[in-house]
Structure formats: C-alpha cells, structure tokens
Picture 1 (spheres, rainbow, N blue to C red):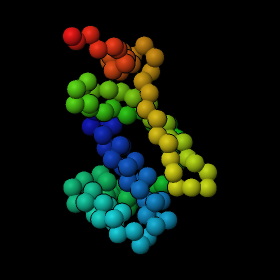
Picture 2 (tube, rainbow, N blue to C red):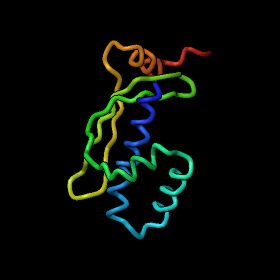
Picture 3 (spheres, one colour):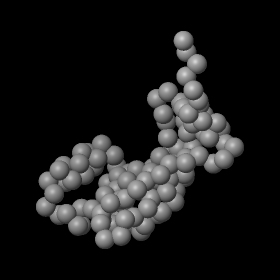
Length: 111
C-alpha cells in the first residue's frame, strides 16, 4: 500500500522534528535528517510541514525478511519529563499477522 508507506515516512519526519527542536546542535541528528532528505521526498514534505502532532496509535504495514508482510498496531508511550519513548508493536487478535507472529514463540522442533 503506497499510501500507507508514504504516511509512515511522513510520520517518521514528524517524530524526528521535535527531537531536532530540543537538540538543535546535535550534529548526528542533523546528519540523519540530511540522509533521509536526500533519498525520500515524502520525508522532506513531512519535515517541512512541521506536523508534530502526537500520534499515540497507528496501524503500519511492515515487511519482515522472514515472515513477510505484517500489519501491526504501533503504540507510542511518552515518558514524562524525558525524551524517552516506548514503542510497542502488536497484531490484532485472530489476524494473519498475529498467527504468523505466534510462530516466533513456538518451540523449536528441529532435532
């Protein structure tokens, strides 16, 4: 889904913008932003829009190298008084993604 991937790239820029505002002298962050900007026009558009609204929950499609495409809900919890975030990915109960992820927890039956 192209639209989902574009939203994801714009959201990544929205997440990084407030960090850049809090740490304007951080050269590593500036280098990272420049690298994204050099290769991704959707990131640039998101960065320029200054869209920094918090999005605590978001559904994303990800491609895992072994499991294939997964549709996961991402929840971001902000740690008050810090710049720390806890990001959780979960699959909807009963979904194909949940079934595939459950295989990771299955005991290894190889001899």
